[in-house]
Length: 171
Image: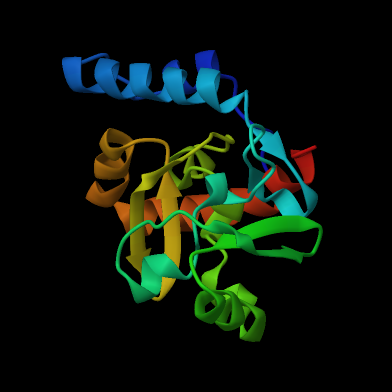
């Protein structure tokens, strides 16, 4: 597996041209990297919010599937799973997670799917989400999500290749 690329290496890759679109995309990526560096991490590479200690910013991973929208979890419906604390909007959602956690845990541990495809770790916005092939993907922002959606299959293939080594680098 390739080593993670420095941002300067990404920008200087052969064939990289600096159009307004690529400049905007590069700027978005740099911002993702800068803000993503403030994310706390826990066991198994899960994105843990440093302000509340909860996975995926305290949002209910089951609600993305059952309610088709992000819903904040409640303190009374939390669960420790593999060393990470997850919050749920209801007991029903918590039980659905207990029965099949892997069906609800976001891809790439809840880190930005676009960044993972670029061999990097970045934080996510709970509102920048997509369910694709019965899997939850989160992205840094709505704008980043739009970039990711333009070629999601290629981004997923790339991120799937990088994720095993990226996950090992997460503290």
